[in-house]
Image 1 (tube, one colour):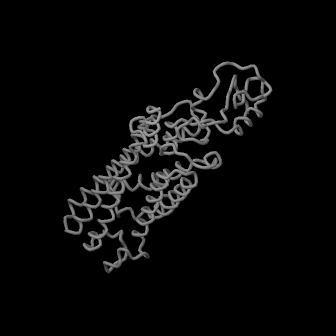
Image 2: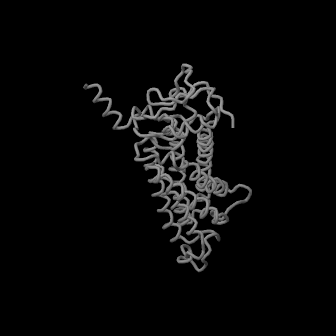
Image 3: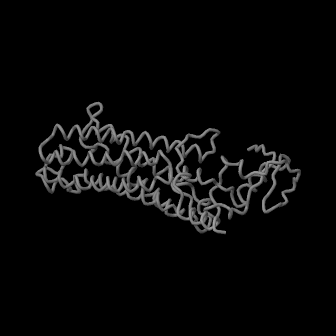
Amino acid sequence: MAVNIDTYRATQNNENFTSGGPMEKDYGNLGSNMNSSINGNTNGNTNGGGYHLDHNMDSDEALKRIRTTGSLSISPELFEKIYLSPQNKVAGELRKTFGNPTPIALVGFLLSLSPLSCILMGWQGAGGSGASDVGVYFFFGGLLMILGAVGEWIVGNTFPFVVFGSFGAFWLSFAGTLTPSFNAYGAFSTTSNPAEGLTVPTFNASFAFFQIFMGVLCLIYMICALRTNIVFVGIFATLVPAFGCLAGAYIHLAKGNATLAVHLQVVAGACTFVTCMLGWWIFFAILLASLDFPFQLPVGDLSHIIKGASEKAKAKDEYSA
C-alpha cells in the first residue's frame, strides 16, 4: 500500500490535551499534529519527542512508525462525534487496542426502531404493536446494544455505556413482553398472545407506566447530551414525546378510547421516525470519521458551548495564577 507523506510528525506526548492520556488515532485532524515544514531527516531519528517521516522513507516503515509512536492526538470535537461522549481521561491505551463500539450499538438501535416506527404509523397496513419483529428486538436491539455498551465500558466511556445498556435492556424487555411464553399479556387475559390487540384494560394501564419512565430516562439523557452535539440531543428530544404518546395510547386503550389511542400511536411513530433519521445521520457521520473520509457530516458540536466543570476549574486556576 503506497503512502505519500512529505513530512509527518507523530506526537508521542499527549499530556497537553485537556483530557490527558493518549487517544485513538485521528488521521482527519492532521493539521494540528504535523510539522508543517519539510524536514530532510530520512533515517527516522527523533526530534522533540516525535518521528519525522518524509517521502524518502519506505511506506511500510512509515505505517509502522505511525502505528507505534503513541498515536496521534484526537481533537475533543472529533472525539465527541466518534464516541458520543465528552473526551475523558482513562488509564492505559484501550482506545488504541479496541475498535470503537459506538456504531455497532447504533446499528442495533436503528434496525429495531426504524421498522417499529413504520409499524406504529400503520404504513402499508402494518400493526400488531411490533410483534412481527420480536426476533429483531432480541438480536439487534438487545444483543448488539448490550455488546456495544460493554465495549463502551471497556474503553471508559460512561455516558454511552449507560445509554446503550439501558436501551439494550429496553429492547429485551419489549421483546419479552411481546413473546407469549413470557406470559406478560397472558396473565391478564384468556389469550396469551399480545399481538391480538392488547385490549385488556389492566395490562394496558400497567404497561403505560414503563413508557412513562422511559420518557423520564430519555429526558435525563437529553440534558446530559447537551455536552455532545445537536443531533444526539435531537434523538432524545424526539424520544421523550414518543414515549409520552405511547404511554397515552396504552392509557386510552385501557379506558376504551380506541380512536384516540390509535392517533397517539401514530404520533409516537412519527416522533420515533424522526429519531431514526437523526440516528442514521449520526451513524453515517461516525463511520465517515472513523474511516478518515475526505468529507465529513456535521453534527452540530456543542462542546464549546457548555464547558465541563474541570475545564472551568482549570481556566479559573490559570486566571488566578
